[in-house]
Length: 507
Image 1: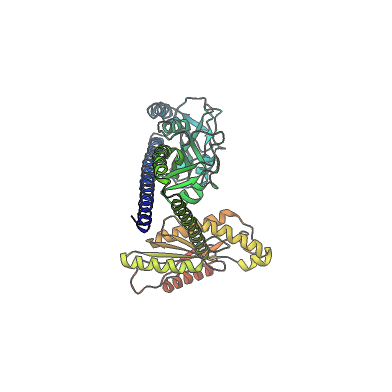
Image 2: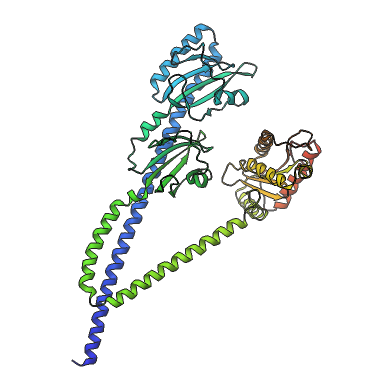
């Protein structure tokens, strides 16, 4: 065999060996990566189902207690509050607490905050709830909807509880007391213990305002802790109703797969999390086993083509680095794009974002024959405010007002934006006139509740005016300019009517 043929055979042999090594590596890596993705996908499905079960459990827990409160309020109105009726009702409270394991106690509280009756049959002569948050809330709010409080220690036995309560009105509609159910936080903790989430897994139940009610496993500062700055609330639960996300804990640095879900009836959300490291523990063991066999195989074949294998490895390393660089650039581009659509002062969407979203909403509503409403807000006597307190104070005032107006975004399609200067708008797809006016009035009331001093305003505080416009059924010929013009005219009418009010545009 000639030298040339020997060289060709050697080259061919090396090529075959190298090809075999690369093929084994690629197949093993692809198989392990697919196994990893399947493991994570299965974990996501599991944690999603757990979050769903937790949400249903919390929903049912509060619903059962709430149903009891509705019944109690009805019995109070029907039977009255004579001693005989109260004694009968007290027995009913005790039986309900015995039937519902989540209940620590049931209470009927009069308009002064004193306990009329309670399921614990504790001496009510010295018991009061007049300083409790739920009592103050119902005393100061006319609505009859249920209210869920922050965690407190029970005055009956010192146990940690969260309360759900309802206002009771007299025949003339005035405040006449509260019916309240105390729900054991330990009840939730015991239920959460039934889920195997591993050593680093976690479950939380929190309010929509970002206050932690229950955590499993329980930490020393869990109950009542604020989650406002936690990623699970700030970036996810405060933005969307449900979802799954990979989050690194700010407390222990553990990467977790989190699934969160808001309750349908009550202002709460649950979140369940699995440690990513624990989820992939078995996968890592398999990978180690596969790598061991692969290393042995490559050791047998490697002496035929070490240099070429190294070149391939260097190329793969360079490719991985290029991918990381490209992903970083894409991330920076996305961040810049997000900044371009946000108003730097208020944090609301800017004019450009509003114009684009308004046109999209018009097209969607025209296609589906839906309604579209727009609320335009303007700060009353804002020039006087700037002249009196300075522009820095004016900027801070706008930021606080924007935070209030942003809460009007209650659905995924709603959009709060800074239209220009001190003019702020809220776009409400599929919203009729009555709801739009109601939302505008709620915002006006919330702004008044801020009690921002303003000596240039006859009211003595910062107020805003609102103009509401709507299109009952959006047509192809309807434009953003038309709706904005109507809202602007309605705002002018509100200003002419004395400010600090909402007016709807009528032809």
